[in-house]
Amino acid sequence: MNNLSDSILINAYYQAMRLELNIEFIALLKSEINRRNLAIKASS
Image 1 (spheres, rainbow, N blue to C red):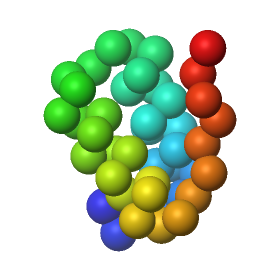
Image 2: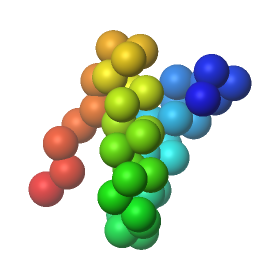
Image 3: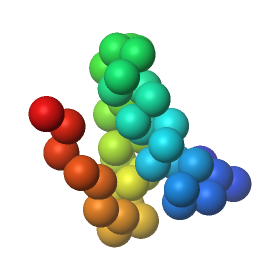
């Protein structure tokens, strides 16, 4: 995960949510976003 830029990580998270990918994969992305103290917008 360290090789991903912040913007690519956030985009991957949004795409994973949009495509309803595996919940464990989404949780992994969100965990890394939180570890980096990045802000994400809540989806509606």
